[in-house]
Amino acid sequence: MRTTAELVGATLADLGVAQAFGVVGSGNFVVTNALRAGGVPYVAARHECGATVMADAYARMSDRLAAATLHQGCGLTNAMTGITEAAKSRTPLLVVTADTAGAAVTANFRIDQDAAVRAVGAVAERVHAPESAVADTVRAYRTAVHERRTVVLSLPLDVQAAPAVPAPVRLPDAPRPVRPHADGVAALAEALRQARRPVFVAGRGARHAGAELRALADAAGALLATSAVAHGLFADSPWSVGISGGFASPRTASLVAGADLVVGWGCALNRWTTRRGELLGGTVAQVDLDPAAFGAHNRVDLGVVGDVAQTARDVLGVLGGSAQDGYRTSPVGAVRLRDEPFDDRSTSDRIDPRTLSVRLDDLLPADRVVAVDSGNFMGYPSAYLSVPDQYGFCFTQAFQSIGLGLATAVGAALARPDRTTVAALGDGGFLMGIAELETVTRLGIPMVVVVYDDAAYGAEIHHFGADADLTTVTFPDTDLAAIARGFGATGVTVRTTADLDAVTTWCDGPRDRPLVIDAKITNDGGSWWLAEAFR
Image (cartoon, rainbow, N blue to C red; front, side, top):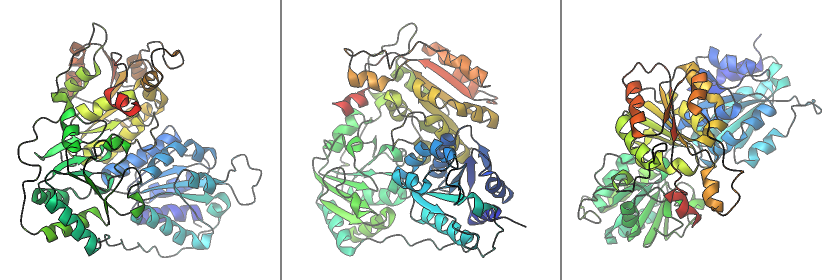
């Protein structure tokens, strides 16, 4: 007789979970195997946080629902940082976790799982009884997919073991896109008519609306920028100025600051994207599904509630076929940081991170996915490594935790196997998440892992200054390439540009194992973007 755990796994497979990740323990063994039996591909991670981050990245890069499966109690708490990142990012994600039985009040694994989940901003759901198992599972699925939420579905052990009560699985209808009110559409259209230097800044909520925003920008004469998480959305537009905010080139920052109208499309317009509001000198408009987003970080003069694509279409309809030059009076020219001259500070045994990044941009395949960890180094791969589109950049930074980058790269690689995945990490984050290097080699992912290795937690060095006692955040040099070889990867140490010939060798094939580059970088005294953030 089939158990409720088996029914839940089969239901999730029927609903269309595209990929599952996890660490299997006794509490999630049955439901995980039921998912697999239903045809859902499964990847065994080496840590629960890694599994959840992989699922998050897979969902972002594929626009399909992913799941993570966890053991009760400690399995869930191990995954909490990844769950928090996904929840803050509004990633549609389903975390399926066991829970202790209702009567097991003294069980070692027992915690208040629902309270823990709600505390980090995720949605707590549970399978309450065998009779409601299908309905509970469908409800969790609907909340994840249709409300773009991270949902944690708890499966108590006694309910899991009970005989299944079959019920039909009815896939809920997708909601219609939220159409903006006519008054808001008219007001935004008029603001665009009056603007002479409009700039669009697209965020996570606009990644599905690139074509609509381009069409409207053409009519309004607007320049196109993105927040970091939407990097690549306008990569092939001659009117794209790249990432707005801390990772921007001086040219981009000047153009955004000079706008008389900035429209944030599905974009929080937070301190990172606007340099604490300093780039918002003119009128500010914001389009978002959530009215609470308006003014949450900076002043907003006009807020329009609506789906980004639908709003852009409606505003274009009001503007009609007329087009204005707006901010497009002359080509925007070079807006990439790699095109800005710099004083190369490389030495005989340390490479300037800018020199490293520019050279990697030239050497690595252009059809790529760049996954970036958090840390002082993160501006270099974000600003210097080009990406082909919005599915070429995976930025799990909503919680600003280091150590998530390698797991992010695994999820991104599985979502986009047609591209070369580049994991950009600091040495601290690499060592913190190194367990998943075994996952990379076991799966045979042809990934390039670039470690910007300054043997320190560089952000803290800059934050506290050279006069502080920094012995707690600086470390002896470590042979990370040798460690990588121990995991079965190809490991190389890079101190000069000549050492990067190893990248060409790897790219030429057979790419049968990941390449880990231990890049010994010069001390930048605190990266430019961090200096701006701490100013």
